[in-house]
Image 1 (cartoon, rainbow, N blue to C red):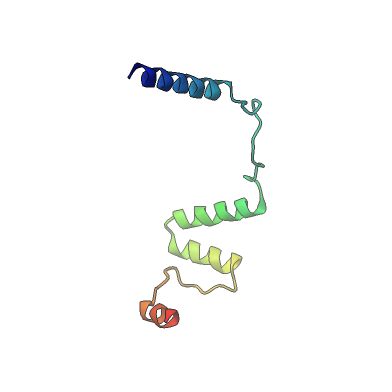
Image 2: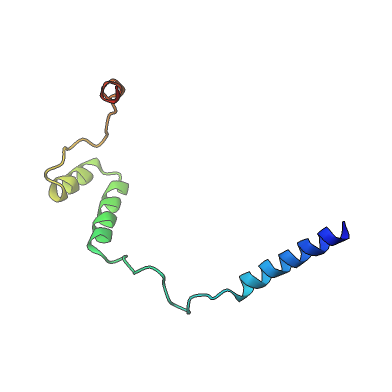
Length: 88
């Protein structure tokens, strides 16, 4: 029993030391590129702002201006019978 406890304590100590001594990124360094100002991020935030405004006409105008080739339905419907037939 004492041997098992000593082994567990040694293992826990090694894990704790590994976590404490593990290399960390330099201050201010980011492992990912900053994409907050990318064209996709700007488009998404514009879409989100219009969507969250709660103004249906404003959102539809935004969709028409920015996504002219897309259908104008705000809600999608799921036809389970069509999906069922397609999967068989």
